[in-house]
Length: 190
Image 1 (cartoon, rainbow, N blue to C red):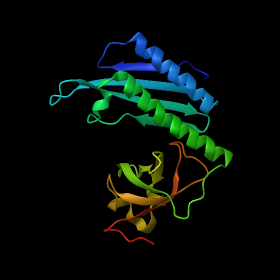
Image 2 (image 1 turned 90 degrees about the vertical axis):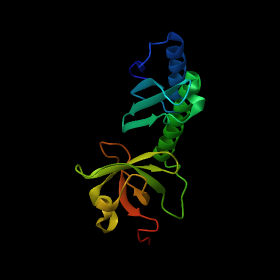
Image 3 (image 1 turned 90 degrees about the horizontal axis):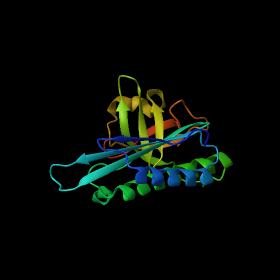
Image 4 (image 1 turned 30 degrees about the horizontal axis):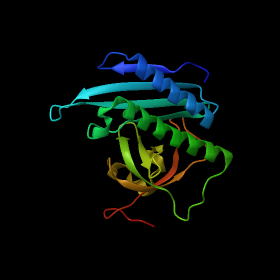
């Protein structure tokens, strides 16, 4: 890694033991993808009024020469994340899967699918004309208004299911969809 791991604790005091565990996991990432430029980890704790224990949420952002890959831990309903070490492990497992997928794509070892990838819209910014889709493999894909077929961008909402084609080149936001087709009972499909 070209820079040391950056670790941010929110709503809690820093823990040297947790920092050590995070650094161990980050070192393992370099074996999967040797061109990691930087790694930032955010550990957040929330006290849910409806639950006795604290729940930890861990986000990991890895910068590589071709962009950025990020994962955020699940929301406050994953009670396994009452254990900070489980939350750290799960976040690093998720980022490792994404790095392995990126490395396979870069090597050209991509499985060929008869159907185009599917995903769910996870974030949409209508005023800016773009959004993000999470594929069934868990990868976050950027899409622009112009990539949505049949001008259906304005009909998309968070949770909309779509088929997409992923472009060879990445955008400044990472992997990018070259075409997005809404699917489901309210949308036509090809």
